[in-house]
Image (cartoon, rainbow, N blue to C red):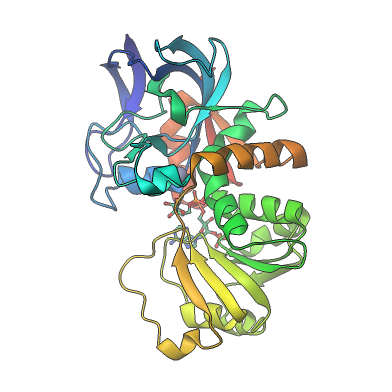
Length: 334
Ligand code: NAP
Ligand code: ZN
C-alpha cells in the first residue's frame, strides 16, 4: 500500500510531499486512515534534529486520529471503521517489568511513532494495535488529536503527584502542553498559577481556569509566589530561572519537567531544602492514556486548536516556531 505523506529530507528542512510503500500488516497491527494530526513541539525538535535521534527522510506527526481501515489477524479489540488515536509511542515489548506494571512508556524496547518510522503527517499509518486507542464518541477528532501526546504528557504527572482540589499547581509555558495542563487542572479542582513569557496570553489563561497569571520574564513576579505551590510543571524547552521556581514550592513540593532545557541544570543543593524535588515525566503508559481520554470526555476537556489542511504543513510549522499558535495546531486531511 502506498502512503502519501510529508517528509523533511535533512535537519531543519522544509516538509515536501513524499510517498512510501507501507510495511505488510503484521498480526497485531492496524491500518489507520488519518483524519487529523496535531503538531507537537517534539515534531519541531525532530525536524531540527535537536535530540540527535532523527532519521531522514523524516515524516513527523504523533498526535494521530483516524479510522481503522485494516486489521491484523490477531486483533480482536478494534474494528474496521472504528475511530482511534495514536500518540508518541507505537510499540513496546509488553513483557518487561515497566510494561507489566503499566509503564510501557518506560520500556527499554519502546519505539516512537515517528523516530525510525514514518509518522502521522500522512494519509495512513500502520501501527501496533495495542498502541491505538479507541476514542470516546464525545471527543471531537480535531480536539482529541492533541490529547494523544500533549494531553497524556501533562495528565500523567498530575495524577502521579496526587493533584486534587486541595492542590496549588503552577504551569510554566502556556503553549500546547501548558494550556492542556490548565484544562485538566481545572477539572481536578486545583488552584492554578500560569507562568508565561507572553503577556497577551493572560486573558485566555484566566478564562481557561488559571487563578493567577505571572509574567515569567520578571523574576520578582515569580518570587512573589514563593512558598505557594505543591507542584510546578515546566513545559518550556529553554533554560529558566530554576532557583526562583524552586522557591515557589511549598515544603515537599515538586518541580516536574516535561520539556528538556538544553545544557546542564545547575541547582545548589540548598535550593532543595524543605524536601523539595525535581523530576522528569515522559508521556504516559497505556492505562494512563485510556484514563486520560475518559477524563477528557467526562469533563468536556477540549484543547483550543487551530486547524490547517495537511498541505499547509510548512505554514503551520512556521507559526509554531514563532510561538504564534493558540494553542495547538492540528493538520487535517480534507
Ligand atoms: P509549544 O506549544 O511550543 O509550547 C511551549 C511554550 O513554552 C510556548 O508556548 C511558550 O509559552 C514557552 N516557551 C518559552 N520559551 C520557549 C522557547 N525558547 N522555546 C519554546 N517554547 C518556549 O510546545 P509543546 O508542544 O507544548 O511542547 C513543549 C515541550 O514539551 C517541547 O520541548 C516538547 O518536546 C516537550 N514534550 C515532552 C513530552 C514528554 O513526554 N516529556 C511530550 C510532549 C512534548 P509562553 O508563551 O507562555 O511563555
Ligand atoms: Zn509530542
